[in-house]
Image 1: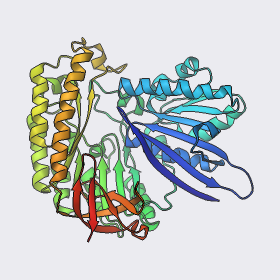
Image 2 (image 1 turned 180 degrees about the vertical axis):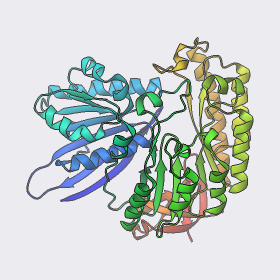
Image 3 (image 1 turned 60 degrees about the horizontal axis):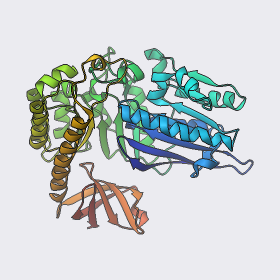
Image 4 (image 1 turned 60 degrees about the vertical axis):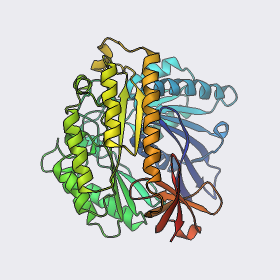
Amino acid sequence: MALRLILQPFSRVDSLTYQAVLAYSSPSMKPLSLYIETYGCQMNVNDSERIAAMMADVGYQHSSDLTAADLILLNTCSVRGGAEEKVYNRLSNICALKKKKRELVIGVGGCVAQQEGDELLQRFPKLDLVFGTHTVHLLPQMVVDAQQGVRSSQTEFFDAEQRLDLFPSTDTTGRVSQFVTVMQGCDNFCSYCIVPFVRGREVSRRADDILAEIERLVSSGVKEIVLLGQNVNSYGVQQTGYPTFAELVRQIATIDGLQRIRFTTSHPKDMSDDLIACYADLPKLCGQVQLPAQSGSNAVLERMNRGYTREQYLQRINALKKARPGISITGDVIVGFPGETEADFEDTMDLLREVRYADVYSFAYSPRPGTKAADYAEEISKDEKQRRLAELIALQRKITLEINRSYLGTKQTVLAETVGKNPGQLSGRADSGKTVNFSADSSLLGTMVDLTISAAYQNSLVGEVL
């Protein structure tokens, strides 16, 4: 039996979308086929890896053709209204496939599933199963039940102890960079955010379990670890006797054979001095940080319940730049939040100019059910939100291109991760997280390659092997 997992980005609209492809072969039987689409954050991408590994154990392989699949799963995101509507439209189209293939099993997981539960089964009669963010491990049995004609929904939340045991290993054959979940959930309750309601409260994994998993991954050939959590830098806060996130990163950095550490996502109010010092002290910690501001206006930040001011945010940014000169900073911004004035919006534009983000994930505000902001008076028209968003995107594209061009002629060390789109080309990420494409033999895959940057584009760089 051979098994490999591939994550392929295939579109980007208002969220990252991935197709998780599972290739499986068995000499004794024809395997069933699996197709997964994943919407949203890297936590969902990681969940899809776990799903693919679990379904491999019960005989499912990849189908590159959606219409040939025996099992189709949508792993969903509900952080924004647009992403949620996109899932509903996609699900309507997929359910129509049952007209020609009655035995097809269709399931929905992730945050939309957690939010809507049984209502999805009522809304889509051809949908077979719904599984939430805490119940991924129940999926194999749910699929078996669906094959027997039993429709089901499993969206209950588990307590902290139960959740700590729900981190099954995934196959990493041939992969050099791997996600490792260190915590789940969120306790911040930002007024616009649905994450605490669909992911649950914060719970941190035991440090010994995290270290053991990383050691196992490194022994299998993994060179880079990406630590995941809704708010990684609040790791250990809710449990007694746990190290801080900075202390955990320092422990991870001592693992022999591990060459790079990244993490996402951080909350500005929890970006401690100790964690910032890690950027100065630990060469293995990549010079890249995702630090969402959401707004540059103090009035908006207060209504968002973000827990910091613009001045405090900039203090953290400046401390990071001092600790690691040239650090690559990315962020998130919401425009058109209820009550956001033109002056508030200009404060956000000024923040972009001052911080000079390498990239920003920007969105027009959409109310999420159950959040405090959903009850705020909606004062911003859709057209006005779209105007502001377009202006912000245009400014950030200009800044991003300027930053990318600043790499021209510089030497960068890149971890060669994948075969590139063009023949004879490889692709990987620099220490800054920038994608670099370069011509090289596939024998360099999985190695650190020194390059000189020879071209810079909006979304990537081109390098020449030294």
